[in-house]
Image (cartoon, rainbow, N blue to C red; front, side, top):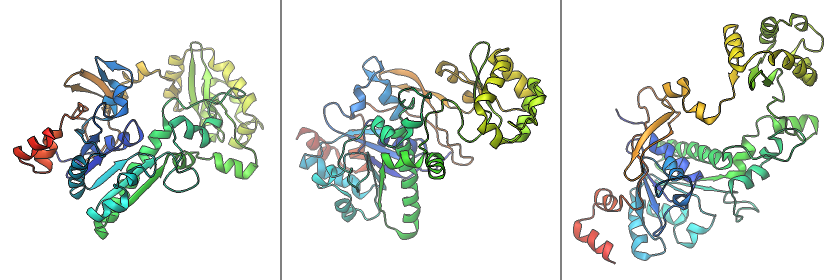
Length: 392
């Protein structure tokens, strides 16, 4: 079955996480992604733990389905081969510090002269404009600067990093959206364009209602643990053996919850009658509900609340996530076989298309594994030229 992005050729100059995650999505959906790595060690993340033998599971989980070619862009011979690829590419993705590609003579303005249809996606810490554009950035730096760390964690505790690299990953997702948007414009105009995505911008974009709360109240939001800032009850409640998530997001669900918990006297209690009332008295509400939820186990509350029509969920550890029947039914844990590391399980593709579905079908490449294939099958070089290229 044809994949949605089949026929799209992507040059991936990125490394570690933000860029590779973006191109991983494109590869899952059918794009031909040619990963261009520097000689020696290749992508930095090839050296990141954990390892299966000598192969990085970190690298393998983010670079499935790509082809690897080794090129030294500081070398004129390799740069010439790269420019041949640019002429026939649809998309280029890089996550260097702004100005790096320009120093190599390979910035957007130079490459658009070679291929006006090229969509050039640059993912960086702070974007290609503004006073911070030349600063280096890592995920936790933008989590900190973008405000998300200031609202994550328990009250009156030190700031907490989100448990995954949301600084990189949100930039990857917005980068993918930007690329697809630019390709749609190209379908009409015939011209590519530059997609400039800054990690800090993306962190600000996902602050959800934190900015609105600050603008309305004049108070900077603070960490609230698992509690929702605008809805109650909507947090993790203690059980006999752990915690359970109960998000009763409207007045009808509140009434249902009270009936199930046997606390019907609180349905019309002035402190809790409306969502606004419940939010205003959320700490008292938490104590009242917690006294009841502590009487049963998480599994028992799951069964009781689900059967009563109240949303409920457990807090799964990762070992439980990878065995969850819903996760498995949606093919969100898939197994691939790497030529050196062997079989390993990784996260699947969450984008489910009815007619042109994506699929995780190929493992991550070895360093330079597809160099000859790219030169012969993509660029059309003959054996003599390939041999000369390798010998130089």
